Image 1 (tube, protein in one colour):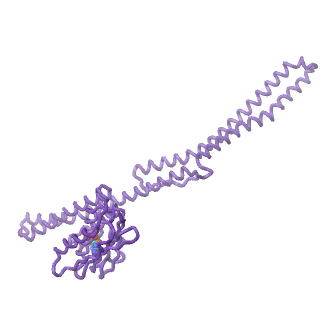
Image 2 (cartoon, rainbow, N blue to C red):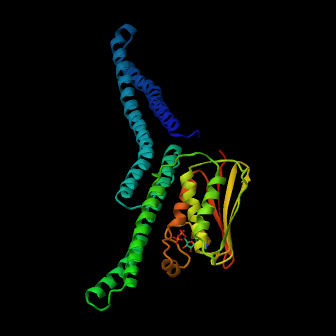
Image 3 (cartoon, rainbow, N blue to C red):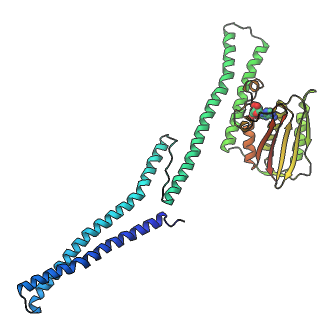
Amino acid sequence: MSKFNLRNRLFFSHILVIIFGLGTFVAIVKYSSPRFFVLRLEQLERRGFLTVRSARTYLINGFQSALDSGTFWSCAVGITAAGGLSYWFAQRITKPLNIMQQITQKFASGNLKERMPASDIPELNELAMSFNRMANSLENVEQRRRELMSDLTHELRSPLTVMRGYLEELADNAIAPSPELYLRLVRETKRLERLTNDLQELSKAEAGYLPIHLQSVNLHPLLTSLVERFDDQLMEESPRLKLEYAAELPAVHADVDRIEQVLVNLIGNALHYTEQGYIIIKGWRDRERVWVAVEDTGVGIADRDLPFVFERFWRADRSRSRYSGGTGIGLAITRRLVELQNGKIEVESELGKGSIFRFYLPIS
Ligand code: ADP
């Protein structure tokens, strides 16, 4: 800890005040009292006292009054000097505290841009820096909350507008009811339903409320059954699904339901965005981690878009994805789920060639 921390400062300032007070006292007593006494002696000589005995009372009085004047002046100067010094020290410590209090008040009343200035007292500086870190994170949360609200409004508005339009036209007899029309309405309602489900899942995952039961999980049987499940739904012209995951790879420390959710999202996306070619699920070991990758030969993602794919509501081509029913929440949930299991997910992709989504989990 620095030599000038708050404890040392307070300690030395008190010592300094004591030394100053005592110093002035001693200096004044030493300097002035003999002078007062000499004055008395001179008066004594002028009055012509001859014997010490006759001068006794006068001398004692003289001594007393010299002491009184010395004490008076040293008290007056000492108290003023020591008081001034203490006031100055106290001021130096309370001034930054007052500023901090004002800033916290402004922050609490909603001015999230307020930050603490640096202080030359290490403890206060540390406090100011902690406050600033907290302020940054609160400001971020607030920013994300605003973004979420505006994205959400946007997402909800489009299916609602479509539905209202059709329903109004139906009510006005402007269009004839038909099975196709009702199917469109059902599709929009489903979209709203999916959006609310995804949102609930996302909010739970982001707030850390999703129950995660970490245990030793062997991924091979899980992947095999998942690939079989997806394979059953594939059409003749769909891309092929392959599994390249060695059965001997070690088990991971994870939640089996959550990994399944992650894999269903990634494989689902790969199938969604791949017209032809193949989708390979690979696995390998890297030190104390097991990596799983879902590789596809689909549309790919542009370089400039790659940093955003895991952001909620992000979609490469908004109109196309909306038509195909995407909400842009899937990968945000996927990333959160992987992180909750102490792993990390990353993406590599080339437009028109395909994408690789890979994540690792710790070995159990
Ligand atoms: P969505 O429900 O829209 O698929 P996601 O969060 O799962 O939401 O994906 C976000 C966006 O990332 C998608 O809209 C798409 O543009 C892009 N994307 C995700 N996976 C792939 C993939 N395998 N190939 C190409 N683009 C992808």
